[in-house]
Length: 82
Image 1: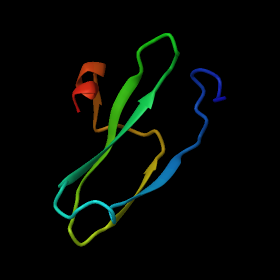
Image 2: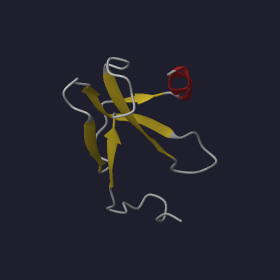
Image 3: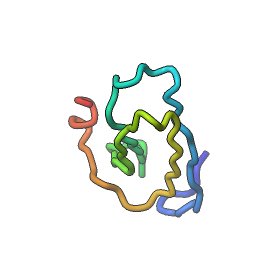
Image 4: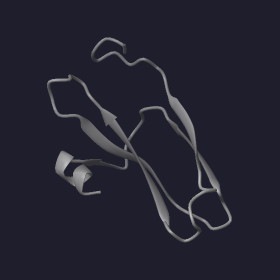
């Protein structure tokens, strides 16, 4: 169960993406998206919050989402296309 509606919980998410099992050169970028429901009866807010170019010399990427500003917002239709 989350916090009350419209209350900032002050929490963040930390995670690591390991590319060890992905063949080198298969992808050239990584895009991280967060999906926020302000109310479960409404459409979610879908935001791109981080993008990076994948380097062949880096096999692990670490990210933290603190709920800050987004790079851009996607509609449900745009999200379903990607």
